[in-house]
Length: 348
Image (tube, rainbow, N blue to C red):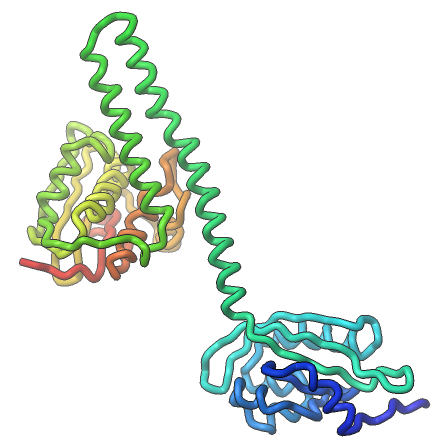
């Protein structure tokens, strides 16, 4: 049986000389790392017992790579060692010696001598920033697509209502029909405000905080009709009066959407309770509630249990994040649904 020529120190030097500034290493035909450069030692913080060992088995065994990452890497390097390809690139997530994580791209190329593949050189580049930018762009594109769908779908109904009543006014001259048209236009304005909140990252939303009385705010939302018209037998109760420090406009969007959610889902003659206690600000109803295994999903953009916009609870979460708060969803004392803003600073 023919034996592949052994790697020499010259092979090592020639293989990595073109990789200044990047981590680099040399594998022999059995996937043992027989050479690593100083940059790789510096960046990873790994001991030579890990660096100068069979790769990727030792890295996976130490927990620096997941088994799935090891499998992908092993398949790529085996193709190089088998002479099937002259260039393989594999992107992996690596846990470094200090516990931090990076995303790297390793370029694998064969080392040949006398027409035989005797090993491979790997050059590692940190692509964490690039991958994060790509993910941010993907998230932005996804958000814009959802917003486009939301605006094109949910603006149509109030827009049609406003146009219909305006046409009737032109025909009949009955100006009282302008009131429902005005209400529809107000609804459009509210939807646009919601869309603007959803279009921005929480850290980019400007907060102009001041003490806000939650009871007064909820009463204004309830009476305004901007977040839906409560049925005549619905009741708003301020259980625990209090104020929190928040941006009044953004908090109004959050509380208004929670009230609308309660009106839409709490059933007939709902009682909706709001208040501020030592666990935050809450809106709770006496409706059927939401099963525990569905609560996390309902804060996602576009998720709705009926024909609603699917944006209400996503708005609440976005407003909370902009303030540095979180949203806790659970069961109300009456067995209905409760949404709680965790983190607001009570002011009295």
